[in-house]
Every structure is written in structure tokens, then in C-alpha cells.
Length: 62
Image (cartoon, rainbow, N blue to C red; front, side):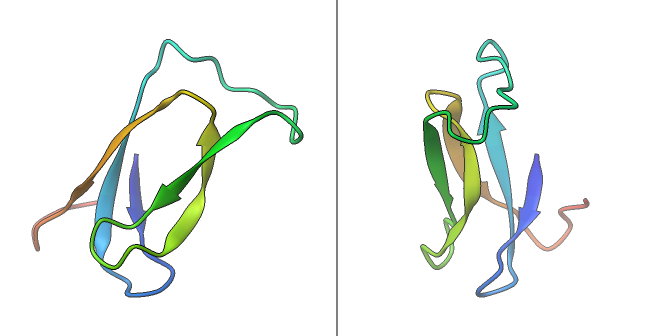
């Protein structure tokens, strides 16, 4: 999924392991997403589902 950093506003892609089910329980363990540009925290995903974050180039579309 594509995100825009809440801190530096640069775009990046979050690569998720789709084998890990989405969990509607807000108290479930989470992995934090960090911007690959500036390192700022940008939300969370299900624990164990975050594969990597990749910087998007200027042509990166949402």
C-alpha cells in the first residue's frame, strides 16, 4: 500500500505479507511503519505482516 509520510510528506510503499490476516481487534499486537526517507512513525500494521518499506520515486502514484 502507498503512504505519504506525515512528517516529510514524501511518498513510500509499505509491502505487507498478505498471508497475515487483518485483525479488527485494536488491542492486537502491531508493527510500526517507519518512513524510509526520514524515519518518522506512520501508523501500524498487524504484527508480523510488515515486509519492508520502499521509497517511491517522483512518478509514484497513489
